[in-house]
Structures are given as structure tokens and as C-alpha cells.
Amino acid sequence: MSHPHAPASQQPDPVRQRKRRLLLFVLPLVVGVVSLAFYLHGGRYVETDNAYIKAQKVPVSPSVAGDVVEVLVNENQAVEAGQLLFRIDPAPFRIAQDKAEAKLAQVRTDLSALQLAYRAKQEEVALARNNLAFAEKELQRQQGLAEKHFISAAKLDDASHAADVARQQRAILEQDLQRMAEALGGDPAAPIQRHPSYRSAQAELEQARLDLQDCEVHAPQAGIASKTPKVGQFVAAGNPAMLVVSKEVWIEANFTEGDLTYVQPGQAVRIEVDTYPDADLHGTVESLAPATGAEYSVIPAQNATGNWIKIAQRLTVRIRLQTAAAMPALRAGMSSWVEIDTGHHRRLLGITL
Image (cartoon, rainbow, N blue to C red; front, side):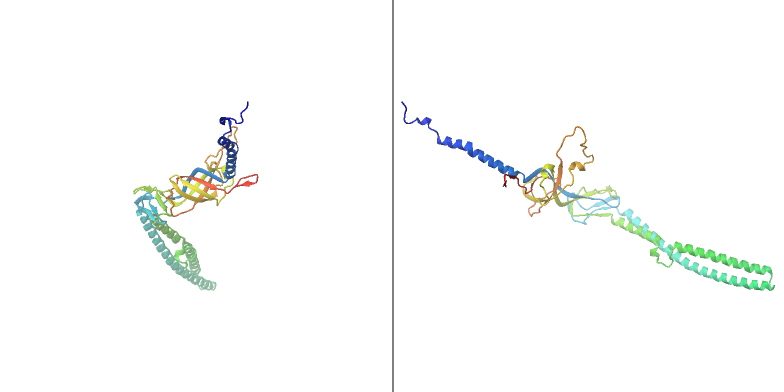
């Protein structure tokens, strides 16, 4: 005999039925929607923690060699462009300047004396020409008298000899005059300042003055002094004696090549620096490197081998920081994390986020 009502323990539990519906229908739907959202949203942002703060490090190289006699900045001190950093012993360069000044004065004296000698030689040439003209006229007179047998042959020979001597003297003096003109640069009337010897001595003096001036080494740009020299240290010309690290910094982020499909200059970047985890920093993509890091290595990888293994390459992205009043002091070499908003949106069946 059947009972009109089943026992309470056999009736379905409404709470369990709702949980079952939630697990069977709602939860998979939520998981699907979230997964779809992650998929559509996933291609927009690319990030990496292989990023570092960079700053321009300008080597300060003296133009002259010598011992450092005074250092006017301390390590890690802020300096302005053109500020005096250190001095090199100027004594040898003062001596060189004195020698150059003496040489220039001597050249000036020698050229002035040569100009005076040239003018005196002109007078001698003029006198020689007059003597030659007189000797030739005298020879003509003696020849006329000889033809009439009024003088002896010896008298005629003396007149001929005197004319020959006057002609040779004129030629010798004219050659000396030409030599002196060449020694004066081809233009005896030109100012001595245009003479090659004077210009050479003047250049040596200017170089000596420049070397003496270069004993004082100034900062090429504003920044932070680093690796400053010590008093008594010998510094060589052209070799870095210290560094000036610029206060203007940027970020170089190294992304794998697959992350850069949609990265373009001008895109917004969110930045976190390990030293300042609470700082909210932002920037923009400034440029992308033209080659991977492997291409810049001294010995690039040779992939044309039998045991080749593909390795994802990295390219450097330069990121310009947006300055802010509360921006912390960033220093070259600090590690950071960056996230680039490429603005790219994936599509699935016409759905876009």
C-alpha cells in the first residue's frame, strides 16, 4: 500500500538544487566570460622587468697632460655646465708660452731687419745699374777714339773690362735682391704679419696659450661629478679623467621580439622602480632599437650550424619619463618594471574590448 506523501528525507533540497544549477550553468558561464575578457584584453599590454634607468655619462678628458694640482668638486657633487672641476699644473705650459712669445718677437725682428736689408739692396742695385750705364757709355767713347787711333788698345781694354765688371755686379746684386724678395714671401711690401714664418710663430703662441688655458678643466654639461681625480694624479691628454652623469634620465627596456608586434613610439607606459615601489611613474615610448642585442655583440651568434636552437631575441625600447614635481631621484642603473599600453584589441566573433 502506497503512502500519499513521501518521507521528508526523500524530497529534493532546494538549496542543493540552486548550488547544482550554479555549478552546472552559472559558474561555467562566468568562467567563460572572464576567460573571453582576458583573451580579448590580453593583447593590449606588454610588460617586462628587464628594464633599467639610463643617463648620459660624459667622460671629462683634458686636452693637455700633466699632474692634477687642485680638485674643486667632490665625488657625487652636483655641477653646472662650465663649472671648474680641476686644475692641471700650469708651470710647463707657462714656460712654453714664454718660449712662443720670444720666438714670435725674434721672427718679427728678423723680418723687419730683412725688409730694411731689402731696401738697402734696392739702392745698391740702382747704383750698380747707374755704374753699368756709365761704363757702357765710357766704352762707347773709348771705342770711338780707338777707331780714330786717338787712344791705345790698352785703354780700350780697360774700358771694356770696367763695363763687364759693372754688368756682373749688377747681375749679382739683382740676384741677391730676388733672393731677399723670396725670403720675404714674394712681396717685400706686404706686412710682416702675413709672412709664413710670422704666422707659424703666431700659431705656436696661440697653441701655447690654449694649452695653458686648458689646464683648467670645466664641466661639459650639468650633472653629477663621478670618479673625480686625486691631487697629484697624472692625467693624459685625451684620456677620461672623470665622469659627469647627466640628471636627465630615461629607461631602456629589453622586450622579447614577440612582445613588440604592436609597440609604437608615442604609446603610454606605466613604470615601477624597484627602489621606489610606491612611486606612480609614467612615460611614453620614444623609440625602438634598430637591431637586437645580439647584433651589437662583439662576436655575433652564427646560426648557420647543424645544432641550431632558436632563442627569442630581445630589442631595446627607449622610454621617455614624464617629469613630475614629486618625482623621486632616479639614478642610472636602477632596475624597473614597465608596462606598455599598445592600444591593441583582440577580436572574437565580432566582440572587442
